[in-house]
Amino acid sequence: MNNKISLVAIVVWLTCASFFMYEFLLRTILGTFEDQIITDLSLSLFTFSILSSTAYQLTYGLMQIPVGIITDKLGLKKTLTLATLVCVLGVGLFALCNSFAAALVYRVMIGFGASFGFLCLLIAVYDWLPHKHVGLYIGLSQFIGVMGPMLAAGPLDSLSQTGGGVSWRFVFIILAVIGLILAVITIIIVKNNNQETSNRVIVISNPSSIINEIKSLFSNTQIWLIAIFSATTYLAIEYLSENATKNFLGLNGYSSHLGSYLITIAWLGYGLGCPSLGFISDTLKRRKPIMVFAVCLSFISLFTIIFFPVNKFVLYIAFICLGLGASGQSIGFAIIAEQCKANYRAAGLGVNNFLIMLSVAISSPIISSILDILSNGNKASIDNYKISLSLLLVFTALGVIISIFFIKETFCRSTKEVIMLD
Image 1 (cartoon, rainbow, N blue to C red):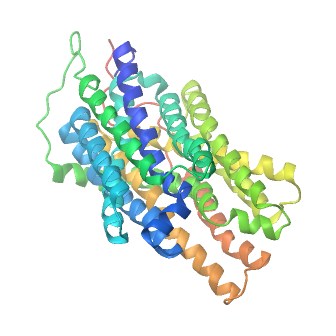
Image 2: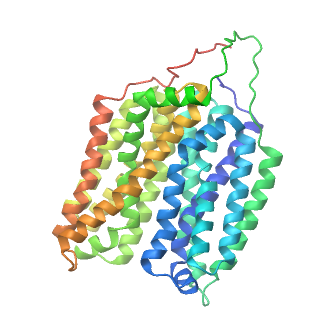
Image 3: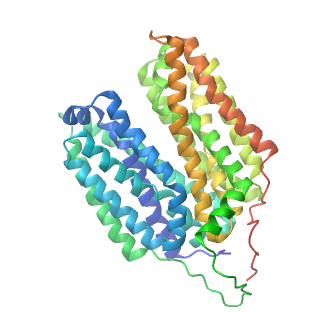
């Protein structure tokens, strides 16, 4: 177990965190230049949504378990370098494309490279940083990642609207150059951590095959229960950020500007909550109580937003608490790693990330379809929104049940490995 920290460890972790922020920015930046991209590539709103969301999320989600296995086999340095270069190639070619088909291929490339980001960051945390503070470091990592979409929604959004607007192609070329610099830094700085084994008892075991690792992964019910918890806790903030908030609040008499501001407030709560809940969990040496608190807070906040948006103050509190509750999924990564052996830990973390992305990819069209059916081709009413958004409450309630009755406490220690005393 790694209980010491060094300058090299911090530099490796920050390099991985920088790539995570970079890929998070690539995930959200198309929305910043929506009008320009639609015009230049002759897209409809539907084809743009396929390009910006579906192509990326499906690629990202489906790659999570393979990414875990690849990372376990290749190691952190090679995997992160490969991922960064694929993103650079995808972003650069996307900047030069002139058709939807080409843009779709390059967007899938970006999603493929980006799918390694968070897993590599988690591996850096577990290989290089003190395990006694792992919840805090995972939370800080996610806070750094949230700076990506905040950058897209802030400075880059302002640049796209000032003085005729900066071209999206120029911005994407700059992003490709930044990615190339990041790849060079990765090659120079990032290392695989071969921890010292002096003064320790080492148990030598036969190397396991990929098939055996997959069997171990799929037979561990706790991994899947924790992953479902993470997905149900995170789903609401992602859906409301991308879909219904502005229109729903508009029907309640609030401005579109307020809706955008509340989404930012929610992500601020998420960014602050990830390291805070991680620190509290590490300090208490407990995972489960924090998970129960987070998902219950998500449920109460979501219920308030849907049924009691009585004034701005209530909405401010509800949205920041929604973000704080959603940040509880970061504890899911900590506890899921404690449920895995080292040889399939990355794959286990991939399952968690996969179900989070899959829940968004599947639930979003279902909720939107219910809204279309209820409105019957007309403009959706407040009641239509309340009924369709209640499905988010059902998912969140599932997370409450799982966290209370089915997830087992790990006491912030690995349940699968011998604890070494230095």
